[in-house]
Length: 473
Image 1 (cartoon, rainbow, N blue to C red):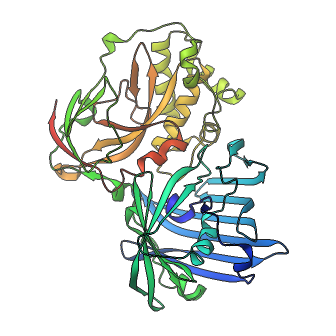
Image 2 (image 1 turned 60 degrees about the vertical axis):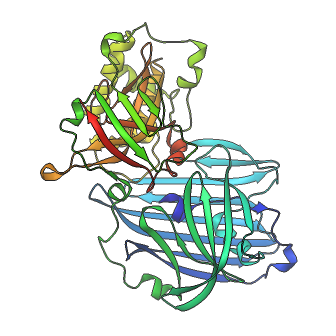
């Protein structure tokens, strides 16, 4: 959802058209956002000339649901660029329920210096081209590109949640007839691939993107004006993100939370994703075997663990503020003086499980924010648990992937995207603070590893990966 509605990208290679070819005129654009054929939001964008460049302001509003709970998501961008649309600075804000995330950045030399109220200061190295632009300015760049069928435009996409740009490519297709609410237009189909996920754009020469389709059934189309963009919004019509991204299966898993061994048949997985995380999760061809860890094999140790090999699994990150006094205080409160790693891992898990209200949330969580609000879904639980464990000197990390949830009335159910944790007890052990599981059951299918900034790795799976249950015990 974030990538489709509020994506940010650096400029393409080769560089955009010379400044003299870019018209120094104001431009306003309205778009309607649709989910499963119903209007669920809008986006508004204005580009205005400045003395030596452009000022770009953009906002979006979208109504979503997450596990049945209504979510109103608002985003706002302000960007300053030079005449060639090279980024000089930006401000970004995302609001969803009680979540309010703000971020700003400025280009200084060969780095993008970013500040966030939630994540603190970040310094990101610019791509070799030395300049970046946002998705809002990419539309202007594409409008002035020579769009020839078969041509591939390559970008290094910058996501504010990531530490480095990632590769993205756009392949230009033929002119196609596009039906918009405002009438029929002709535009080049452009196929975009990013992190294994596929988007499709329609770009009208000299105008820019007039239609965009992405994962989860979301579509954005250009409208004639603000009245048209706001017309037809259906309260409560937002698609359910969790259901749209779920992987249905034909066979029921009778007792999923007690499952120790699971054998799955996989298909349509991205070729570059191994899906194998031994010893718990092993892939052989199209078969995926998962086995829950045996507590009898765990090896405990005194806390804190200071081994150099676990430095990455003990350090603080922008999302896991392990060194903050408030996080350390919560860890001490939860442990009550416990210094044995295995018992500490369990005590921390039960503390997080009991302390957080189980509330579906569209957010980019960090440990301090979760500690203050004491609510959230699996992402909030996993972020807080990892931070508390690391503060106690227990190596911990975040795993994300899918977990099986049974259907209603005996239906087969589906695998839903989910986040949990892993702690080191002589081996990496999966634990789930959302479910209160130590260790986590074998229906947890790991697809990625790391904090919220690594969840982009799931993009290539959404809407593509298929799982079928072969055996569960």
